[in-house]
Image (cartoon, rainbow, N blue to C red; front, top):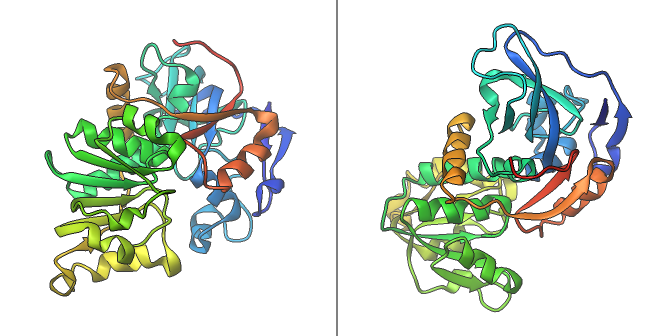
Length: 328
């Protein structure tokens, strides 16, 4: 089969298209013919082994898993002898933040990490609906946001941000979305109640106060966003921040809350990928979740896809197509 392989850490140019052996599923695994996958921030960080401590999981000196890719959608071609909930021919999708090897024509994954695709959904839409939603949902959950409260999403048009806007609206939260001029109508279509164009005004000067400020692109900071928070408000970033401050501050701010207006920052600590994807599947089936796709690339042009994602200016998701498909 054809697969994207990287044998050392580095920029997108370390990626090579090679012929490799098709994987064989273990007893609890399924073999999936991949129809669509994505390139996301997790993937670009993984091939560079950033942050450095990620090497304890991915391999200290070179990658343990040499086929990258986290999100996937495809059709099951073979199942292990212990697989009970899925069968050959099932159309499935999913996400594995530690790597699923989805940048290839075939991949294997454990039964519990593959979920059947909702009807009237293309493989491309399914593949692009998991990573952003998983991180967005866990941020909302950890912020303990409640119905009727107000939230601000900075970077509301990325994979995580566009999912956050929709999930917050599903939980009946008032949403202010921060984006650039060209995407104003998009975020309105996702349900945003108020839109701030960051090219024309500084969103941190907004006079509205929020229970939750979510930096979905990791380009701001708790210090800059703290004035936006109500007493008891929570700031969460999708990035480690300068000098990994978003790892340290969640340990400090709860202790010094009285000194900073009873405001704090917490970490997303994403858990339960299957639970996140099942929620998205249900919302997609109900027509309450829209996958935002920026660009599509064939597998042969994946280096260009990585370079585009690295620019940090994508709208929604970048999809890699291995087999074109219509809605299921």
